[in-house]
Image (tube, rainbow, N blue to C red; front, side, top):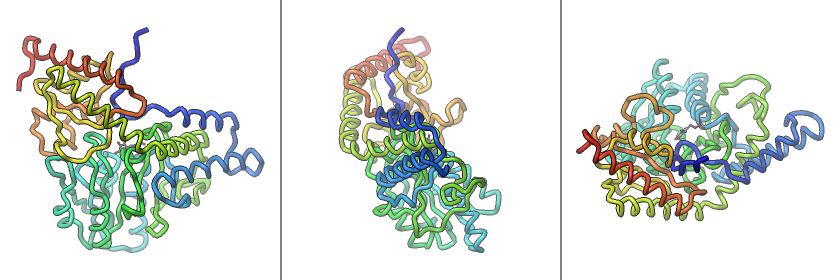
Length: 390
Ligand code: PMP
């Protein structure tokens, strides 16, 4: 059997940390419902409480401010739909939302759903580097804005957004602030107090935990979202459903490890990304960084490869390297990425973009192998009859 491809698609998901796997198996080996009135139930409840503390600690929150969900998609929906419904129920007259143009679909779609119910959605534009424009944001967020939602780091470009500045603008206008930190948490320091956010979404599988679990931070002082899930009243009624103890244990362990390794991982990711960039250049691959001088997640690179079509590179190198073009969540649809479109990137350049995240478990030799494979594919594409020139 040939070796597994080098995995450079860490924005889509990251491999499970060994510590998370072990915590999950410990929970799986002692099955119990955390609400059951016996010793096994108490043991599961302790595992859930530990996970809640570990996740809270990663983001500087109190454990009671963490609501577990099935992932960042659900957390984003709960924040946006839940806050709007709560505000409506309380007779709040504000009917505007502001979301950045580069948000994940799990923010854009619920905002769109609210637009159909009479809310006005203001889109906050980004500059050419993919950073939300603060002057435009200050202009578009008003006293009629109920909620502002901007992600901490983008899932196609890795660009880190000025969250403290944006939350200050929102709060100055009396609006609530939500941040989708699915990509940022565990990769850069996330502090809900320092950032002064009311709500913050997390996804376990982006930080080397299991898929199918995430969380919404709801500040103790913020308007509580209306629940979307009704049933047994778990998690103080905010999110009914039996707590999935093994998933939560894995999430908690992954969050703890990510917090402990924050600097080591960042340094490692940065070193590997720099190695990849120089190895590609040394192998005559011509490219530019589409994010220019914007701050990006350590380990992230978004490359426009001259003379190549992103999807072709991804396809042809797939048996040796796992890479991605636009957002993996919308891959398969032949529509230009809304993120790159918002950055006003020329459509020809847009098609030549590949996104890369160099994660914790990659080695220098993985990166060298990936660089050789990518360079080989790009050179062949250029030499092929009808090869792309731009
Ligand atoms: N937000 C962002 C920025 C993401 O990258 C993703 C995953 N692609 C999500 C939300 C959705 O997360 P989940 O897979 O946990 O639903």
